[in-house]
Length: 333
Image (cartoon, rainbow, N blue to C red; front, side):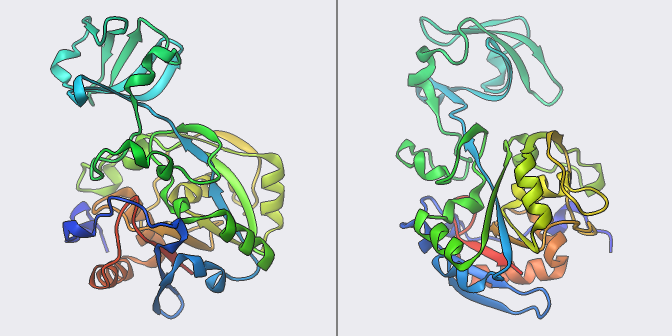
């Protein structure tokens, strides 16, 4: 079966796109799907310990979201910092693009300006900053990089961080982890469920739209990841791994060797997991409900099977689950 981009489309009522998280976090809903039987069950996230295999180890991405959006003139001008190339040089998406032409110096405030050094084919700009990016003079203009389907609301900035976020560098939240609370993690540990943390700084590789009809023609942007020595050693002793989110899947599947063992490593990964992929390390997955035609949805379909992915999503829509970053979760067993 040859799958194309439009095969990953689905109709979603706009009112199901969550604009705020559940409160408390672990009161979001949880869909449970068993691959062996095709059974679908409905519950709440605070009951996660009842569904996980007792011998499993949860693997979560501890990356922290940067305030990488710089908004000026009430949001009419924007610099979205994608990569830091140095203290005073960045790669960024900009708006409006016509004002950021190669060779031009753009004044942002009385104290801040940038010079456009290069413009890539995909619109990404290389900018030289008159003031280093870490300078406090940027602070009034920094904003949380909420996705475009969430109305900008800085009062939700901390809600867009996992409670265990520690290593700053992501351009979007590893959203499957947003459902965890300290109380729930303690309960999981008391039950004997393991907890390990890896790092993947979410960037263009995760949220860039797929524009090619043939999936094999899509090029993933690389994202930096790290898995420490002690974590790798403990994962090698684990009996069963449940990835918390698609970003954790990408770390685990990038760091595992052909023989199925993990090595401490760090670097860039551009792994593109889609139907037909054979998982080498991940046994189960906790994930949110993803955008149509996204690489995240393709990863889910690789784990559930293409037809089953669509059946699960039809069930979630019929049962009025909340979708995307602040939405509900599902557990694939």
